[in-house]
Each structure stands twice: as structure tokens, then as C-alpha cells.
Length: 440
Length: 123
Image (cartoon, rainbow over all chains, first blue to last red; front, top):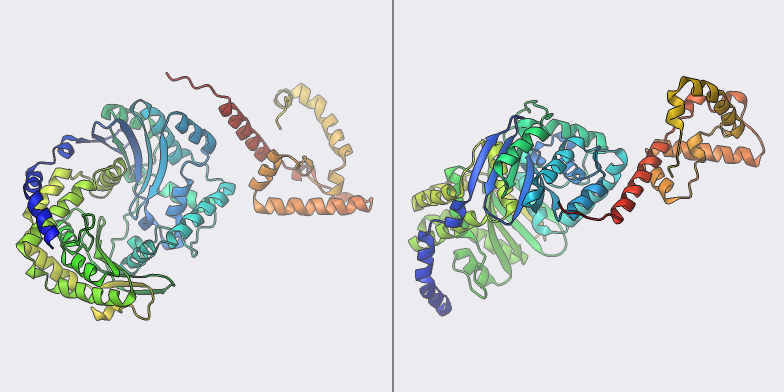
């Protein structure tokens, strides 16, 4: 206790100084958006970084899968940089290596991100490579076997991580379809041939579905290259996805080893004011310590510290039209039981939050928001997603400013609303001891 | 695997095609694989990394049928027999199911070699 007192007094002045700063470095990076002649939106972020990147962000995350091709997005992701009509996999890899670039593909619940990182002068080569992947991949049957191996491998790796399994199950319980689809093609996937992957790719690679995002590249050059390379893109307007609906419920998975528990509630879509408020609540509930050897100051951090054998963290997953808010507890099953009860109690009485705690939570939420724009990859994902799903960019400075309007009253209202939704619970591990959802 | 070929020259010239086609047909017949129910691509020498990789790439049903044809031919040849004339492989069935893949693999191998010997010149 003494130590934490000393720490806070010591850093009191610099911290308040930091807070009043206007996030100069973030604000300085300008974001330009242009609709190219080909109908594809081009976003470029000038952050004066020595290395550049460009990515094709496609509305083809796992939520775009339908019941007859569950898992296909994962296959499509792994088909990226396979043989194309003009270049073999080998050539793509070697040329990228010779130019010192990195090619990667990433899948989220909402988008598929095919990206490349490189030195500024190589923009035209790498954008061409990405369009080759989008339009010219051959999807040969023999490649499907290799892709399937890599898909199974990734699934195996993911299934060995309890956090991933628990959060995937939480999404499945909360949303059932769409956002509830697993990111990984699991054993029940109905994708059995490269034709299915090809059909899916034809469906999703259309002009309204694609955004090209560049960081530290010349915007004019990026737009003119996009005009040229995306000339033949299909303009089919994709069918509007089924809006996500929150259901809630319970999943209990028996596994040996450590125990994990997710307690979730209906959150809010990203970009809404409710989401901002939830970010503050998340920071308040977070049970992680942020100083080395520190005890943590939030109520849950102190609880975790007292129980010794649990770890508590909170999450606020925001998507374009829904969200999932909750806490994640792992450790000894009996302690998880006590913790989960305590969290629910705490949420019910969150209006007792002290002014100091509230300010601390706001500061932490601001930091989290600023930090989430930190890397090239996260910028691409965030801005690409914003353009695809809302059609406009929310600058970082605006997102941070939003927090200044949050009041304790808001927190209280949102917490009440949370508790009204059906809880989503996932118990993973020793399900005999872990709590049931009707406890909350 | 690739070798210099005049195939396209011959194919594009009516005169050469008319001249050489009967010879080709005669040669194919005398080669004797059709009389054992095989296709030309069944007798491409399998013992090379190129063809092995190509065989890995062909569709499963093609691979299974190939195995059956080779077994049948082996049986026949041990018994010193030929198939009855109506069961011989018809010219229209004698498709190149494997060769495109062999070419593809050979191209990839050549590409790999070229890259391994590449000199990088930065503009």
C-alpha cells in the first residue's frame, strides 16, 4: 500500500501533464480517403514512418460465411499467396524477399486483410502482388490439400490455447451465427474442395467490399495504381449480411488442465457512445496490474491479488452492429466461482464508483484507444473496418475526445443495461466446480 | 523434363501434319501400350522428382484409374496376352491427364533454379 502511495504521488504531476497533452503524434498523422475510379475506396495514412504498408481489406471475415460453407473464410485466408495465373507461390515469396517485404494474410470476424509491408519505393510491386492474389489466384484442387493441412494446423494450435477456445465459444453462444462463427475452420467444416473457396472468393471480392489501405505511401500514387489494377473488379452489390442478434446462453466444455470462465453481456457496436462508455467500464473492471510487482488498484485486481490463484481480465469486443462485453477469469475453479460472483455483485453496485476510480478508468481507456492505433497492422484493420462498415473514418483524436463526455451516471446506466441482457457464460475445464449461468 | 520440340510447327502446318500424322499413328500402334489398355501418360517414367510431384497433383480419381490400368497391363504382360481388340484404348480416350502437371512442375523447378542463380540489381 505504501509503495503504491509513493508511486502515485511521485508521478502525479507528469501524469496530469500527459493527460492534458493533445496526443500530438497521433493527431499529426493525416488520413485521406478517396473513392477510386474502379469503385474501390482508397485510404492512406501518412504517419511518416520509415517503412510503408499497403493492404486490401475485404468484408470477408468469418461472419460472411453461411451455414453451407462454415470455415471457408479461413480457407480463403490460407489460399492467399498461393499460385496465381502469372506468378507461382515460389516467385511471390522470393520476389518479396528480394525486395525485403513481408506478405501476410489475417482474418478477423469481420474482415479478411491481405497485407504487405515494404520500403516506400516498392509500392507498385506490392499492390500488384495483392491484386494478383485477389483476382488471379488459381485455387487448384491439389493446392486445396496443402491449404487444408495448414488450416488444420492453425486450428490445432488455436485449440490448444484455452483463451481462444473460451472466447470463440462465448461468441458462438452470444451470436449463434454470423459473428458467432468460429475464426477457425473446425472439424465440422463443410468446405471440401477448392471450388467452394473459389465461389466464396468470387462472391466477396467485389468493389463495394474492398478497401485499399496504405500507410506511409503517396496517396496520389496509391489512388492511380488502384484505378489501374482494380479496373476489372466486379461491381456486384453484395447481399446485405443478416444483422447480428445477441442471444446469450451457456457453454460448458470439459477439459483437463486449468479452468477458465467467461462471463459476458450484450455490448455495443463500435463507434457508438455506448461503446465508449463500455471502454471506461472495461478499464475499471480490468483485473490486470500495469506496474511491475504492483498490486493493482482496480477492485478486481485487488480481488485477484487477495485470492492469489486467479487472473481476471475484461474485454469489450465491438463489431459493426453488435458487441460483447465481459470478463475472463482463469485459475483455480473454486476461486473462479468466488470471483465470478464478486464481479456480478460489483457490476450491480458499480454506481458506488469513486471519482478517483472513475478518472483512472477514463485515463486507462484513453490510453487503450490511443495504443490500439499504434501499429501498422492495427491502423489498417481499424481504418479499413471503419470504411467498410460505416463508410467514414473516426480520427483517433475524436475517439479519445469522446471519453471526456463520459460521466459516472453513464457508467451506472450502461451497467444496468448490461445486467438486463441474458448473460453469456463459458465454463472451460473443471465444469463440476465452475459456476452455472443462472448464478448471475 | 522439357525437351526441344517441333510439335507446334508440325501442328500448325497442314502439309507437315498430313505427312507425319499417319506415321505418328503407326508408331503409337506399334508402341503397344494401347493394346494393354493404357494411356500414353501411364508410361511416362515415374522415377523422377518432377513426375512424382506431378502425380501428387493430379485429381484423386485420375490417380486411381491410372493405378488400375497399370495393374491390368502388368497382369496381361505376365500372362503374355493382349486385350481383345474392342477393349484397346481408343485414340480419343488417350488423353494427357498427367503431362500438363509435369510441365507445370518442370516450370517451377526451372524457376527455382533461375532464382537461385539470380543476380539482384537494384534500380
